[in-house]
Amino acid sequence: MRSPLRGPVTRLDTVVGLLTSAAAVVFVTAAIAVVKRWVPVLSLGVLYIFAVLPVAVLWGLGLAVAVSVASMLAFNWFFLPPTHTFQLSDGANWAVLAVYLATAVVVSALATRARRRAELAEAREREASARAAAELEAESLRRSDALKTVILHAVSHDLRSPLTAIVAAASSLSNPQVHLDAADHDELVATIRAEAGRLDGLVGNLLDLSRLQSGSAKPHPELWPVDDLVARSLDDLGPRGDRVVVELDPGTPAVQVDAVQIERVLVNLLDNALKFSPEDSPVRLRVEAAGPLVQVHVEDEGPGVVDRDVVFEPFHSAGKGHGAGLGLAIARGFAEANGAQVWIEDSIAGHFVLALPVGLRAPAAVA
Image 1: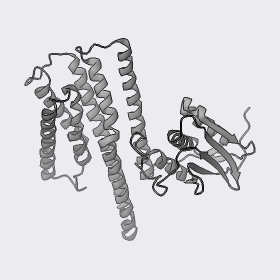
Image 2 (image 1 turned 30 degrees about the vertical axis):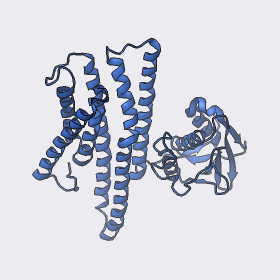
Image 3 (image 1 turned 90 degrees about the vertical axis):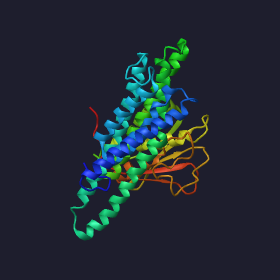
Image 4 (image 1 turned 60 degrees about the horizontal axis):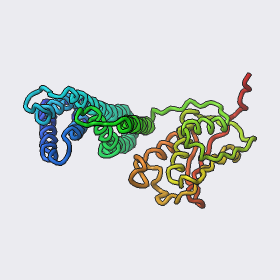
């Protein structure tokens, strides 16, 4: 474990960590006490995430888990009846406490994992020569800042939103005072499933972006027909893929790529086009050979791209409700890892191009 200044842990660091942890729990507890008169108290336990996160980022998983447990004990003691005891008059509240505690531990583990990866990358770079170390240190700082941005953005909004919805739905389901008919019950369960899927996708995106930025997303290229890659990406899109109109030249050569990574690129490009174009309009996927490359064109009838220079940057989103803004950043990262390129066609709005390297040999025939 290392201190917040990336040095060996000292007794002072430990004391500061303990004091900061206690202060964070006290602050969130006080905030809940203020707002509970307007908001159902069972929905407020998720606020302890903001006590756990900074401790996880700065001092690691061990102290973050301790803060998670302390937060749940404080929530039980001060807000769950009978107050000022660790007993619960309503057994359903145990489910709420379990959800809050599990959420806090998952978030702290995610933050700690990203922090450890950043520290490991920096440790490896320090082994280089003095001149090379200066250049690598600048790159390390850039990666570290990017990872911090990932964590802060994800927890401040993109993680908080699905977590809040999950906790609110779980609270309603576990509250015996809330009488639900079958339709309402099914709707709450569907909400939990949808938001859990959204949370799972976001965590997957964060891990993919972390792998790309740390250089650990190594491709395993093989020879693949482009129509197979397109078919796999459409399958991943599910029913939304019905809007995609495919134009494929039957003479298109195979490409030498990592199929899983390039499939992710195609899915993200198509998802972006479907998301930002009218629901009743088609999205066109056109494939053509261009010398040593195969170009895949994704065109939609949306408003086009305004911020052309930053659209591939992490957390660049077109607005509220359009996700965390990771899809195009991950698409570019996986494309470049495979020796491919992805760009916005200058002359046409809403037109992305993916250029893939042609394979060196014809695909083997299937018996």
